[in-house]
Image (cartoon, rainbow, N blue to C red; front, top):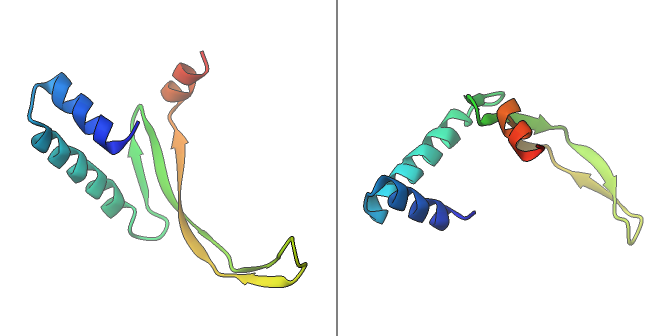
Length: 92
């Protein structure tokens, strides 16, 4: 599902204009991202899942084609863990 299809489905199910549905989707996504901006932050949506900010350490890796060592910088990533209800729905 894409953002565009999500907006279209929301507009159809709620009988609202697509522009209003798009505004709602954008606000929800902005709130989730805003909640994740601080390091170690968590956004939990009961019945859906949890978004959590994780920081990876800087490390030395190896280029598989040349064998040369490469420095990989530390990164901040978002991890998602689906709620139990979603896992059960997908694995039933």
